[in-house]
Image (tube, rainbow, N blue to C red; front, side, top):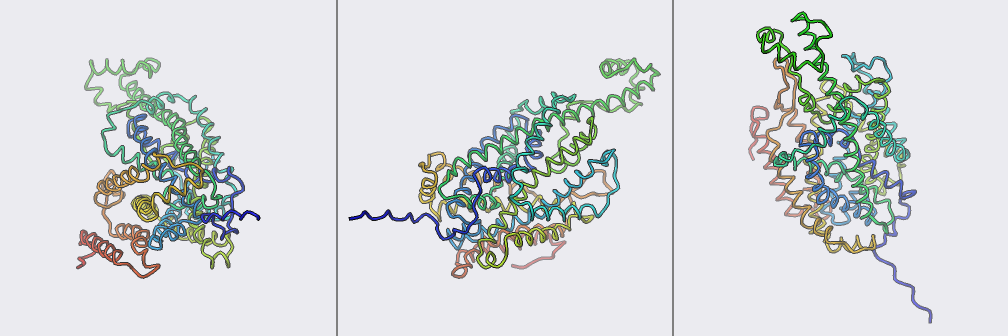
Amino acid sequence: MEPEPPAADSRIIEDDKARPKWDNKVQYLLSCIGFAVGFGNVWRFPYLCQTYGGGAFLIPYVIALVFEGLPLFHMELALGQRLRKGTTGVWKHISPHLSGLGYGSVVVSFLVSVYYNMIMAWVMWYFINSFRNPLPWSSCPQDDPGEIPRCLLLLSVINVLGILNAIYFTTTFPYILLTIFLIYGLTLPGAVDGLTYLFTPKLKVLSNPRAWLDAASQIFFSLSVGFGGHVAYSSYNPQKNDCERDAVLIASVNSLTSMYASIPIFSILGFKATTGYWDCLDKNIKDLTIGFNLKNPALTRDNYTLWLDSFKARFPDRVDNLHLKECDLQRFLDQSASGTGLAFIVFTEAVAKMPGAQVWAVLFFIMLFNLGLSSMFGLVQGILTPFLDVPILSKHLRKEVICGIICFVSLALGLCFTLRSGSYWLEVFDSHVAALPLLIIVSTEVLSIIFVYGMKRFCDDVEWMTGRRVNIYWKASWQVISPALMAAVLLAFIAIQGAPGYSAWNPDYVCDSCTPNPFFLISMAIIWYLPLIPILMAGGYSKGIPTHDVVVLSMWTKSSFAFWNSFPEYFGTVVV
């Protein structure tokens, strides 16, 4: 009697044999690393180190990585790999009432891609103009208003033609350029001062709650959790794959990249601070030389302090009348900038003063372009995969066509950033399009795994995929530590927001001012509602809207009316 064949494992998904697969494991890892490693590693992390005590910032950063970022990242990779679906399909499979989580991720990814395209267009503009001599930003340039829209169009074409095909280059090449900047940056005057500033810990800063909040937010957004891109990427893996090892490897590379990028960045920022300090000294030396009729070689940078103290003691009135600037190297090192300000203002000023400025400008913006492009591929993939999972669309439209539609709709909406008010639009999107919605989406994801999918069932799935039992670290993080940290971050984020507003230029005031504006408030409300309403209305996709969803929606609506009523001068009063 022949033995019966072994029963098929019901957990193996066999109904999607036509689903694309990765050519090899390296392609998958590079795609995930390219999506995670982006602009924030180069300009956000160094800024936070500069703001929160240099090396001391690594303490909350590592804690947030271990107990928040890594567990949530592992969870997303495991879900996509186990269910082999995009973010909308994953949550609809778990429960139709959770469909809105997937749609929320898609909407957030799309809105982020709209303004991310604009930042990429700026990078492309700077790259193209880096070949000019002198560099146009070394003085006040006359912009061609048509250049940025052309850059946006070219980027859309690149996204359509290059998605996943250029990942080997776009992910690895920035590391080569970072190494080149590291070697050269260490030879610049002032590099040691910049690195000393970076690595000298100021532990008293750790008493500032904002340092811990920013550390948690940085690791959360740096890993690109909640966008759906990693869920999409892992869905193309075989189900029997060690997603735990992948999560640890990708998250480690992402964080080490941030630390590695900080060294050349601070070397060059140290150079910029030193040259600024020297320029300040030279101007004061010139004023003192003319004011006191000194011979030119008498007063130098080395003996400036001695001469100045002597003049102040003997001729205090004459020194005061010269209106000398206060030259302090520490003050120049403290001048921090984040985001686009670091890349397009501070760093470009430093590059313009470096020998062979054109070469270094070209290399810097090639590096930024590749970092942004690989992250852009992940955003587009997070939008594209859910559409490909819809049988009607995937049957009648090729993948390239759907990708083209996504990219060119993004292009059309992104044209608002090329207007004269474009910088304000960009600030609205950058400040509000992802932060709060993603925190809510990911918090809901964790709670859904615990209370809807079931923690035991999820751990059994991970054990089946990896071949190892889930250890206590992952269980404790998923079930207790990560939800608690997410709740703390969400509440702290809401608490520190303050009154809504945006920085606006005021010709009657010498500095920026924060101006409440009804157009801004409407924009912010639309951006918040797009991802949040699908979450609240998720139950409507299956058996009508459940009672608890109606209650939640009612509460949300009342709170929204309260929001409008707080600005009666703009909207009047809405009666609930």
